Length: 617
Ligand code: ADP
Ligand code: MG
Image (cartoon, rainbow, N blue to C red; front, side, top):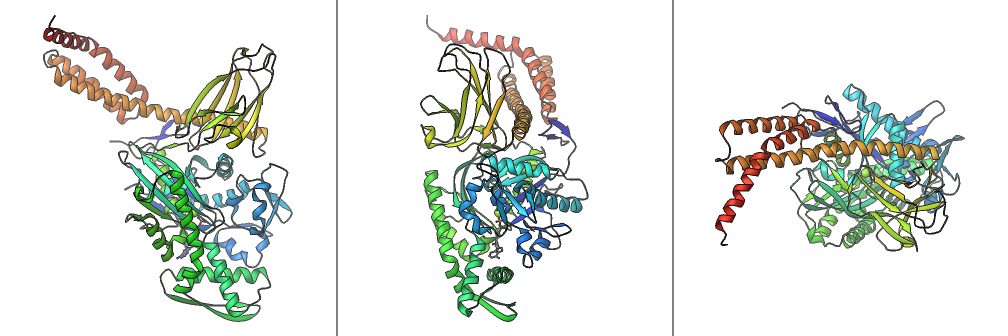
């Protein structure tokens, strides 16, 4: 059977193209593709391996990304940018507590505005900075695959909010990429292990992701190919970097060293990381380096590393317990655990996780650095239509709604709704002659909006003055495939097109909002197209099944020529299903229904007749 791909962004049928997945990490990023012969995912790498450090260095003449940027970090830390992911979609207020973490200059561009980074007198948005990393990955993939790459899937943490997801999408756009979908990292990691690829399978999975600077654990329920995030927990300032710092501190104490320059601090941190990594396969390791112009030899053994890492690992286990509590399940209900992130190579981490979830099914056979990237490539392959019968649907983890009279939460899209999703509801005014109406959008499960999370607000202006209760204001919620929400409001009675000014939480400009709105409109429509194909197909398959049964059950009603005619339609429908042609599926199904109607009526009469016969009057 010929394979036909549907391009979900344009809704068109296209020849098979290479599909790409990207893990845009806090510390490291990776890009993965699919092997066209067996559809297995693999990471595209350089001579240094598949990892591209998410680091950017600004030198006088150019911008370096990845390993080259890391190499420059020691000599000029102030022009080296790392952990940009932490800044995505964030305002200065959000970050204030953590400012000491960053060696570079983060500037406050005003209340509720997205932060910017100042390098050498120039300002950059986190979106721009991330786009440099994405551009590097794109170039790497194009070189390796020897073809243009532009359609991608990018992963983000499950706890990322709309602003952070939108920022990631924008970074992709800026890097010249067409972002087909933003996918949750734990979902991608599960896919890499094949979890959820079988539509019949029902599983509860814990994904434990300990990276360089962040830890998160997600409890997922997978059912009918739907990944539902039951809960997430974690610590955005906890990871392998903390172990490196603790090792540095251990050595400083041991040898009473004074580290005077940030360059020496960087140097020792890198030594600590190297030694730590070596200890996942050795019991003791030593390294030498020069600090303050003096030569030092540093050693560390497994027992020392274990006691250094213990407080950190204990914290992650506490988060796991909270995640289970929030998901309202206990550890025995976890069917599988997936390990993600470089730091899960620590032998002690594996042991602790195994004890915590008390399950034998710990998925750790894949390279933990690569798992997420591999899963994003599988998702991209599914979206490209290269894998038959799989349509990944996500659900929204929290209810979305607006504030109504008295500060009540009126849920418009309930939690666990499939996305993409679109709901419209009518409202009216509460005051005579009211010409403006405020629409306040919230996320959460509580009855009062004050207890929920505000997503943004806007005002519908220019409602014609009418008595209270007369205007018909339609509020539309549209949740696109990435989990990004767009809200609209229209006064229906006046029929006048209203201008809507949306003021989201993080100071996006009106133009950006307009673009977001338009982008989501087109995406949602096209995703719906793909969905309607699947719906038509499911209906047609039921029709085929029912018709076959009808032929079998009614040999006395149907002559051979009738059966042949019906079979002819069935073949046409099957061919249309194989060709993924929605219109033909619907057309031939209708034709078959029209042809069989008279037989169905006869069968019905017969059934009623025999039923009457049996009845005692
Ligand atoms: P992120 O998701 O934050 O981008 P990664 O998943 O790439 O991060 O993990 C990077 C972290 O993994 C670093 O702290 C690194 O030191 C750590 N790491 C990598 N290999 C090992 C190893 N063999 N043993 C212990 N830690 C490791
Ligand atoms: Mg990661």
